[in-house]
Image 1: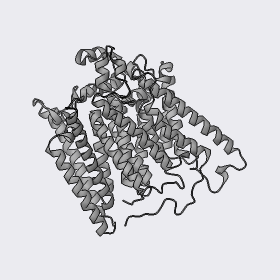
Image 2: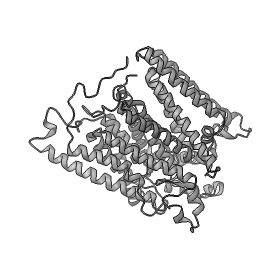
Image 3: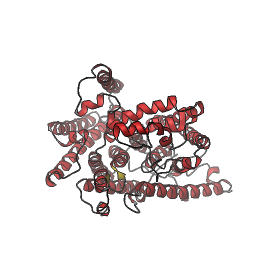
Length: 545
């Protein structure tokens, strides 16, 4: 049967301390002030987020660090008490070690790069970097340590996150129909790049790829809370936000966002497959997202389709009979699973059910791989359109991401010495590593330069080497594995897991940046914070699955 034990039932309630309050305030500001702040419209969007992140993280890290040092030498140290009011800061996990190793490798890579100045900041003014240098990496680790050791789970923080992501997504939806309530587009009206800004930039985030990455944090967070919350107000907010974030995903028109989203849905389906009550919530959430797409379609009609246009995935959920069929199927399954859970008194399905579902997912993946092999190596002459185009991997795949990936391996194989293969060319130095291919890039695709492989993992292979990539993969994979284990008993871990899995998947086709990567690592830190001996999560359900 489903376990409904409160996380506070066998342990005393935590006492809120200054460090807890600082960690909570930091998370709150990173999801409210950070994504909304702009100093001079889009021309400085990335720079603005970079400096706000540095300022907020620096203040939080230094403040918590000083208080912790003072506390450690105090006679009444909370660490020396039997009942700590925070997670033991000296208890180390695999994720901690991997993250520390990644920072250490970043330091070595920077010192030996020959471009220490650039590696420190990840310069963006000359388009040679994305502000993902050593300072950003070090502060990501500082923020991770503050949150993982001292975050105190309170409802007002969750409400604040919902407020921030809702503002960003609603602005994106409004902007998508060329409405400009903040006057940002108007500021570029007389500039030479007005059309580019109008088409590619949105909300207060920056370009549409940044919006897509933001939604890959916001949507899984909303869905995770919707699945786990037992508080009526929180549930209503979560389901509403899930619909809004799905509309945001559609207007972002980024296939990378849908990649992360669909991978998360498959991952969750396997995890929840034995629990009919959770499956009911899962399918209900899918029906909500489908209905929200139809609301967006209504906007299309009202605005006479005066929008920026849709990608193949976006159009799939907006138009055609299939989208309506999916809504009906999901709503029906939600009702069926609800009555099944009532009839069985929330008993779990037998274990073989999960293995059957997992087997189906594996067969699906094998089928996709088979199609890619067929259209890439066997049936190479057939012209592919629509969704079929994803099954032929060549230089033109994914808005020529295929070209970047293929040439990235060439860079690693031919242009990097043994030391660089181990430690990389330096944080955020992909621009310089790829420079020899700029003429070819310009000739084939009309782009004069690039500062990213458009794949976070391949990018790390070049900038941080084999050791850096291994540390980064260990960091992400260990976070997922440990969070899966905690999610069986702690609902907040399931919320974090939704975000981590989604963002890690979209990272295969996207770019690490100072706008969204900090938000991703906040949830990795929050997953570690579920190691707290107790927390204030009584507003969420605890389901066993």
